Structure formats: C-alpha cells, structure tokens
Image: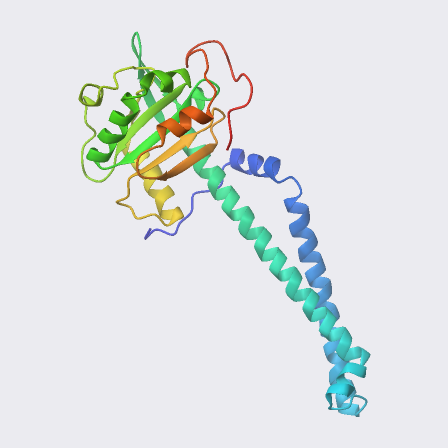
Length: 265
C-alpha cells in the first residue's frame, strides 16, 4: 500500500515467535558475532597483504598468491564473512516474515463477529478459539454468496466439524443483511456476521497486499481452533477438503474444549 508505516509488534506476537523458533535469537546473535570476527580478521589480513605486496614479499603471480599465507587467510575470511552475512540475512528475513504472520493472526483474533443464537452476542475470534474453526471469505458480493451457497450444500458436515463462516464483502459494496436467506445457509452456529466490517476489510486488504495478491481478488482464510491460519487461497473455499481433513466435534458450543489436535496445518 501507499502507507509504509508499520504497526508496532504486539507482545503476544513476539512471545509466539520465540515459542515457534526458540533458538533464532541465539543464531542471529551468533552470526553477528562471527561476522564481526571474520570482518576483523579480513581487515587484518588485507593490511598484511598490502604490506607484503609493498615490500615485495608476495609475488604478483597466481602461484605467488597461492603460496602467500596472508592471501589465503584473506580469502578464507572473505568467504566466511559472505557465508555468515548470507545466513544472517536469511534468518532475519525468516524472522520478519514469521512476526508479520503472527501479527496478522493476533490482529485477526481481536476482530468481532455476532453470533445470533437465542439472542445476539458479540465475540472476538479469540473467544472462539478452542470451540470453532473459523473460515473468513472475502471478495465481491457474488463470490461471497456463491461461497455460502456451496457451503450450504454440505452444511451438516460443516457444522459437525465446528466450522463457522464469516463473510466479508470487499470493495465499496455494502454488506448484505439477509445472506442466510439468499444462500440457504441459515444455521446461526455456522454463519456469523462480521461486526465493524471496515476493520475486517482492512485486515483482508493488508493480508492480500503483503501476500502480493491483487486487491480485487476473492479469497478465503481458514483457521485452526487455536487461531493459527491452516489454509488460505483464492477462489471458492474447498469445503469438501476441509471436511475430509478435519475431525468432527460434538458441536461448536459444547463443553468439548480443545480435545485432541486440529488436523493438518
């Protein structure tokens, strides 16, 4: 996007990053220290090489360079420095990507949706963790309705897997108020309504922008019960694949809290 300002990294994202990669900080510090050592060694070897050349101690021939311990030491230090810098850049790049992903998941967990069972109730996605596998579908109104219609064809199996769906119409179109009637997906345990839709749109747009996906794309994001992203992509969500991969539960709102593991990531 045009705004390059980054939101501050949340404490939760940092803690989750350390849990997922507990030795990354140590590796980064080690690469920095070893790079500094190789750089210092290379500088000393370079000074010695210059002195040796000036004094005529090093022959200006290929054989002379090979025979010089100062030239050999400089070459070893430069190769070591190049390898260590490459490892450092790779590790920090992986760390930044991981933190960005965790930050998006943390921000998503704070978004609100409405559950309309006996009476409407507002919940954050974080409150659904352990009870529901959320799938967010975002795109044009036609895409959202088609995604919900395809889910309605297997709504019993979707409900058995504790999948709940949050539709978000992107762009300038308003969020339809009667999606359940228009699509046949009328189960309030399955179809939830996004609250503060602009925040949902902003999250989806930022996620697509960081993934290099055009802003007018139709996308879905599926979460595990612990809130981590387990599947995402463009086009209609593969409901039958989700059903095949996920184990049934005894209903989203039962007391069967976080029983077992939540399928494949």
